[in-house]
Image (cartoon, rainbow, N blue to C red; front, side, top):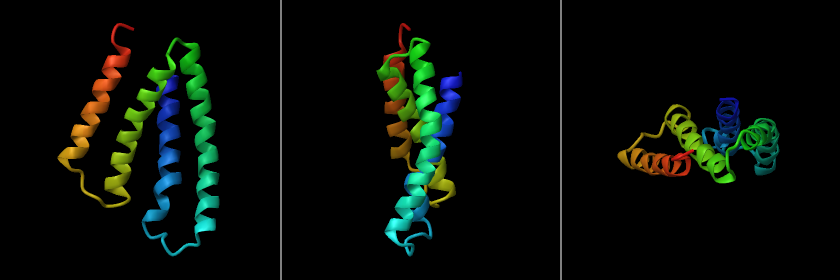
Length: 111
């Protein structure tokens, strides 16, 4: 459970680092945007690195850690896309999420 919670925190910060500037920030100088994004990403790494170390130490494979992170990323980004960017959720987003969740199922099956 700590692995999942840390990955969720990590993804919230990384989504913010990568996409915060798209909503109303296009007038900011790119070097400023990069500096701010790197600052946010530093916090993300403080969650991601322990998440992966804890997960790996508890028997998760590298592939399981990565696919779990991807599934969490889609959930976090979906919420960000709708609430911050104001973009609609489409059936294709749900279908893509379903494919990722199937991949999660394949990698964790029999574990």
